[in-house]
Length: 137
Figure 1: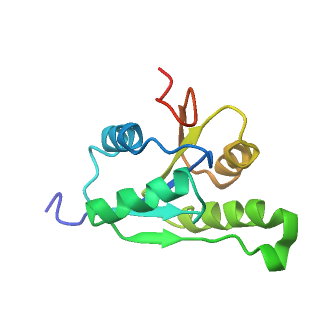
Figure 2 (figure 1 turned 90 degrees about the horizontal axis):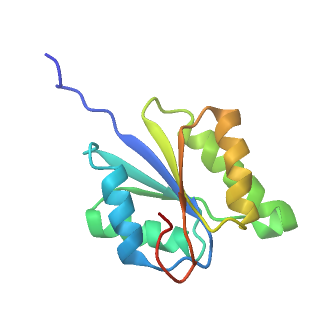
């Protein structure tokens, strides 16, 4: 009975807060997720890439898990604590991955590279040439 059970692919989408090009974002996500049919999107609930991920989930009818940063509890470390929580969450699933839209300077996104390695989460980094512009080749 091969193919009877399909596992949900848990896709954490992270990246630079200044990135707003939904068309380029959608094209890249569609290409990277083309072989998946049952997908959950995981987002950090911020502006930029996180907002694009939430829009993408809603437009495709995918379940969405949002992990907002708890600034009152963690202060300046809230973003890192939230990123760690998201990595811990997806690491509990066999089918998982991270798509990181990175402008080359975002510290939070760069921290996720080490967290992905720590938690064993496969990661694809998409370099964006200009946060307001198109994807880098």
